[in-house]
Amino acid sequence: MTKQEIARAIERGEGVVGLELGSTRIKAVLVGADGTPLASGSFDWENSLVDGVWTYSLEEVWQGVQENWKALREDVAAQYNVILRKVRAMGFSAMMHGYLAFDENENLLVPFRTWRNTMTEQGAAALTALFGFNIPQRWSVAHLEQAILNGEPHVGAIRYLTTLAGYVHWKLTGRFVLGVGDASGMFPIDSHTKSYNREMVAKFDARHEKDRLPWKILDILPQVLLAGEDAGTLTEEGAKLLDPTGTLEPGCPLAPPEGDAGTGMAATNSVRVRTGNISAGTSVFSMIVLEKPLEKVHTEIDVVTTPSGADVAMVHCNNCTSDLNAWAGLLCRFAKAAGFEMKLGQALDILFTASLSADRDLGGLSAVSFLSGEPVAGLEAGRPMFLRAPDSSFTLENFGRTLLYSALATLRIGNEILREEEHVAVDTLFGHGGFFKAKLPGQRAMAAALGYPISVMETAGEGGPWGMALLALYRVDAGAQTLEDYLEQRIFSAGNVETVQPVPEEEESFDLFLARFKKDLAAEKAALL
Image (cartoon, rainbow, N blue to C red; front, side, top):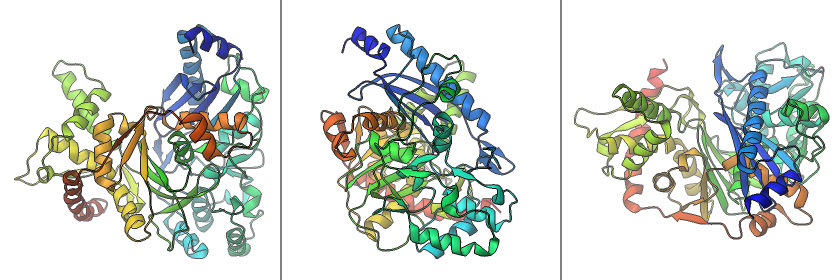
């Protein structure tokens, strides 16, 4: 389409929007009828550690969403000289899990507890034993269980419990619903019924009969919806909340709200069995769609679902690029002190590119990049560390690769279980997120870590917001097609994919690093004392 044709289509309200509230950035993407990105807007934000809790205020949420929409509107105007007044459909996604509890008057009862918190070990362990199913610390039900165990006074007042995506969708549509992928991070899903596991629901309620709670668990959880199902429309109040200028027209349908794991699957066409994807940014997680259920319960592995309800093995690590970004920021400040201007992206490109020329043993360097707790490694908090011996080869190349490998070490630990103990098969893994902006170095580091071919699509940089836009497109275009067929036939049929195979020498390099990393975890634990 020409720019004029695109402008007319936007003016007619034929664009579709996906908006995702990530950990460090809120981003919206406007796409055309074929899923092609047409415009975007973004807004940077950061979580805060308040009284020991990683959180964002609801005021920050709406400021971020509104500023993000404003940025999208301005990008449309700048590119096409059109005012974004209406869209065909939209969808909202956000970082998965966490704990947003509201009373009957829709007042927030305690500050939003994000996925990053590692404060629910006792509750998560109790539910894992009760269900015979791994309940990670960041899941909503783990936070709820811990609040009950702690005797927190707000528990009895809970009327609504949801995720960040579910909350935003609720306020824009009036519908208290959640996409099945995001819901699977609140409470276990039965892959046959595509809703909350009734046997585990019964066990949870029976466990808390003695507590005399004024609710049952299903009373406070959102209704579960599959991709393509009716999740409501943008209300007049919702349109004004999203766009306070009053420019945006209400009435468009919304897709079921999803978590960033589900949108990552959609954005990489990884919703079929034996496909998988890796989202690598502030956190990192791999998702592999399972052919059969896992044989054992592994605390390092979550079982969640695709947006259409198929079982997925998820290895989620709280830490990935934060420490790498911090080092890059230090290099930027050093450059400025030396009289040169350098942006963060430039510093990261230098580190990523330099990593390609590192020594096989990385010069004996090591790092543990935990800014926050890391359950896969058994740590409740983080202390980023960089280690070297007196005879280490402390070069830029070795420094860069050490930081990259450190960002991926815990992901490797979880995936070793899937490969060696559960014999999970996967044909290729698709990468997306900030780690893959420098495609070749990021792909080679990931391939070395996991031992699988790593593919990156042209749209990898769009990530979750684009995946949410595709789910919104599917909401209005699905017809009788499954999500798997729709994505494969309508969106990715002519996609440009770059694949990097594992290099044996680099796999060996990662193994040498990982052996040091595992030993260094003892020093990481000691630093917390």
